[in-house]
Length: 175
Image (tube, rainbow, N blue to C red):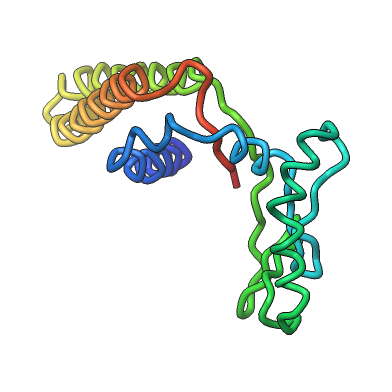
């Protein structure tokens, strides 16, 4: 149950940023998509283009990131970005960085929305059966409310995906 609530909150918070500007999520430049897929930050704080790009893609990415690297080299090392691929170092803790960045297809979001709707229905049914006894009445009310909330949340998520998501899916980073 806790995992479901955490996943729901993560989806709601990530989708709330897209609610403000849904057109921006759909109008992504092909160059931005290419940079997201093939440009990383080295431990030295410079941009690196991986070797899986074609010659023309490498030239277009190089035209953008070579001047940036030249300017970054003139900056002192502590002031540059430092993002090792596995951990992010903060004051007293190590947090995992993105373990996956890429396109998540639309059907995966729809399947998750249907899963949330089904779990909400399950909680509603269990709450109904729990309400059959006098002692189960408060628990049934709570379970029923959770079921209604999950069903409404899943329905909203399904509507949002059907309305605003492009057929190819969204580019996301999963932590």
